[in-house]
Image 1 (cartoon, one colour):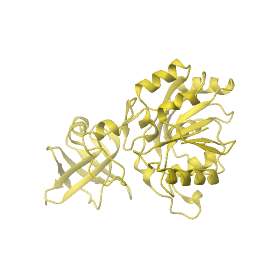
Image 2 (cartoon, helix red, strand yellow):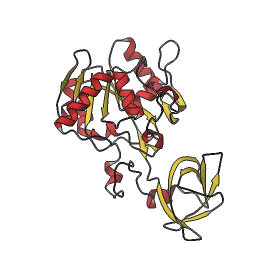
Image 3 (spheres, one colour):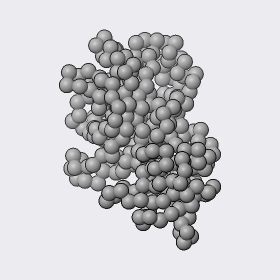
Image 4 (tube, helix red, strand yellow):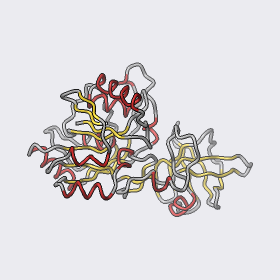
Length: 307
């Protein structure tokens, strides 16, 4: 779906036709985060089955994890033989301390962490399809799904047209699926996520903005990364660390001019970001059109280009 914000027009195209909407000098920014097979399964000494979703690597043996009803100090033997002790670190934070470096085990035995609304077990093919073709920096537990539509052929077509391609890293966490439950969205606590803006990307984007060229973000994760790196002069700066930027209607975008994104669920921070970018009423109109036309929503769904 193609949305023209100023004209409030909605069009329908195929994703491989994207280069028709791009022009020489555009800068397309991609999120090169890589989803890790972060779901592990095992049992305690008492035979209780546990699933652990690894959320953050603290060091080679220690990971932050999400699990149901854990107890401090229990030992879990995971499928394949790796053992880990559950530790409480703060009120709501749980850690798993493995008895050896866990990276190789996770890659071999871990399952891909499909979103909770995909009601099936992950399959081997998800290791390919739930990953962008340019994924490089390991650390995400959810894919930057707007990027799933790209192929090497499409990227080559864009480059031949004179489109500049740059990268940021934002490791998508479990908070991306956390719905907004507060009546006042300003009271919603957004999940912090790790992001990197390389110096090359910052220089390229900043130069393009000064020259009046468009910055096209592929995904809400790229929007958050870029808009979180702007200094008081409106210049994009290299950055490393966590971002808690929450974008909702009323936000003033200073970097991103166009956006490629998928269709998001109600009451999600992602839908609020898109509404801030294109206008709430226009987005609701577009979503109504998407339902009417049979567009697929969510992670393995279809895409929207907002110009």
